[in-house]
Image 1 (cartoon, rainbow, N blue to C red):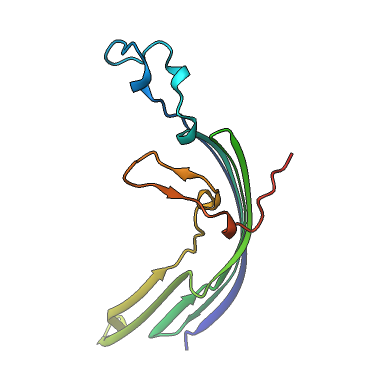
Image 2: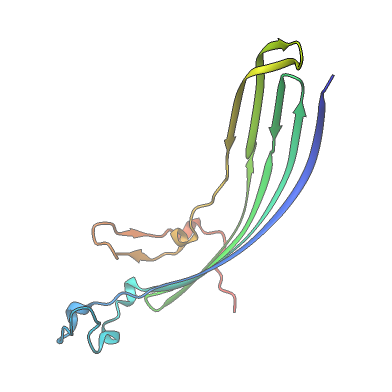
Amino acid sequence: MNEYSYIQPEYNFTHKTQDKDSHRYLLDRLEEEGVFGSLPVGYHSVLDADNSFTSRYRDNTHQLSVRISHWTKRFSFIVTPQVYIFDQSLDYRRGGKHHCVNRNTASFALASWTEMVYSFAFKDDPFMGAQSTQNIKLSYLITPRTPDLAYLVPIKNAVAPLNIYEGVEKLAANTACES
């Protein structure tokens, strides 16, 4: 009988850094409006420091998994349970304040990639032998994510006046800045 199985351990490491900045200006406070399509002279003097920021994000993700596969004549499946270990940090500057947030978390995905195939309705061909004519295949992908670290910075974001929100520092595991 054509039946076989295998188990394959896997490890992946991902390192990601991202720098962002967003400078907002209160141009309505300038006396001179300037020429349409260009910034007026002196726009640096009306920087909206409370709604401007710079940030540096770092994410180291370790992924441990075991791929379990099994095939028979009529049925096959692949299951890959995975453990993700996230080591993340955010250095955030806004409104003259410096905030650092560090987070170490783990997540488990029972089947990050699962695929099952069942074959049925065999027909007999005198030359080719028994062949399946129909397959049912079920597959799905689950990838865990963690909330954005910017939500853990205790700042009020009022860039959109109808959508003001404030971060919650108490949810952060570690907020000490590295020197």
